[in-house]
Image (cartoon, rainbow, N blue to C red; front, top):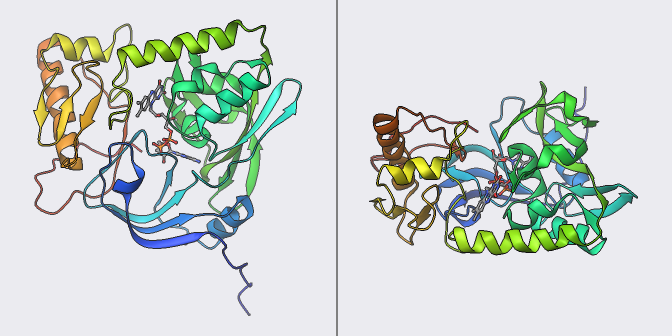
Length: 310
Ligand SMILES: Cc1cc2nc3c(=O)[nH]c(=O)nc-3n(C[C@H](O)[C@H](O)[C@H](O)COP(=O)(O)OP(=O)(O)OC[C@H]3O[C@@H](n4cnc5c(N)ncnc54)[C@H](O)[C@@H]3O)c2cc1C
């Protein structure tokens, strides 16, 4: 029987794409295949022709991702710059595709005089990344605003799913069986009398004062343990300023690891491990990375893989 004819892909497929170009830490080796879809239909057509066992890594703005120096053996699907549809869906909902930047979404809501998404203003990721991470700030959290999310499954099927279909908790989202990635979301909003816009501006100013914004980092490296703050624990162990190669614990915010031009992913991963060991020894508390760590160690670079958590 003849194979069904696949539609021609309109997006960009590259081989050996260096992922350091696409992560906020500016590190990470090459991806075997790197696909930027032209739009939603193109994405679905691409997913349909992927082999069932193909390892897939979704990429938003790479602001929570540590890709190891050996790169990713499989296919990266990058949505930023694509799937950027954003509109008011109804009086009380916005529709946003997964590639929309969180800051753009927050600004759009503000322009529409709507409250509920101001916490996204300072998160340097995409809607897809925020859905995958249950990103949050200043008391706001992505999934508290989600009415439903559109998912694409391994077989290329798309479906709108309610929050009850996902296991959602602090910076964790467990998807249903067969799920591959997020395509879009409908988010709940409410009328704003101006007070939300004001508090968003205040939160952004606070962020600028307390975080090394603008320097290469992935935001908070570790989750906050129950009832405590990872930054407080790291600082209490005297680790501010600790450096391995091109990776350094920020002097301003101890839960941020900063990189300079010569950094390797191995430097960051080894520093993460050193922080975990020191905090465990001194306080008995096990810090858990919030950043997603993926890919293969570089050859002979001394990287001690601490396990994938993507
Ligand atoms: C300066 C700075 C400040 C930050 N502040 C905050 C903060 O206040 N609060 C907070 O929660 N985070 C914060 N972060 C971390 C990061 O911005 C968030 O986790 C963000 O949601 C990640 O989005 P992204 O598009 O960059 O995702 P990426 O880093 O590209 O990916 C993160 C994870 O999401 C998955 N993913 C991405 N897109 C999709 C998709 N479409 N479908 C399925 N999975 C997907 C990836 O595979 C990966 O596992 C900060 C980071 C930086 C650098």
